[in-house]
Length: 111
Length: 113
Image (cartoon, rainbow over all chains, first blue to last red; front, side):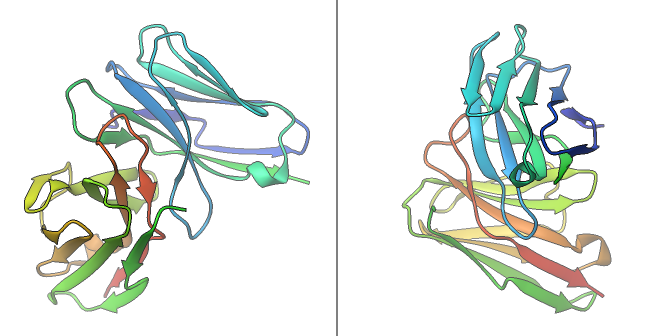
């Protein structure tokens, strides 16, 4: 059983469309991170959210941390082929020294 | 980019042989992690280190051991490789641990025949 679930598992869309991917858990996290991973490379951090209800924007990407700090969403506006990749969420529990990763959402943006 | 290298980048080995993967950092970060990545599972923590000679187990530590004799090097050893350990292995570093940015290495692709 995954501590963190991500949905959808796969997503294929056309350039210019909007999309939202989700990261859900029954556990509370002190912070949650989103990473993007491209083929043959390690994940790269996009954002860290730490406060329930927090919204952060990174150009066309909007990240939200749920009020109860159990879930998060990533919304991409006007997706571009360069957004293609595996999006991973990772949660840190209070007092813990490490992260738990979700299985990822594989996004493909077609030109 | 954070200075993290992994070696080897690719390895093919046979069941029952020992294998050691190396992670080297030039950032002087305290925390180092070993993950494995498999389809449908995301990244799963094998072992991590919070200082020289200070290590702890992650969620999938069986069959793996680690050592950290210097700040910059974190070694992962598969004591007797099995086919279930075929995976992509990633090393990561972090300055202060959970809640902080993890910087990942390029990965090692291991195939156990």
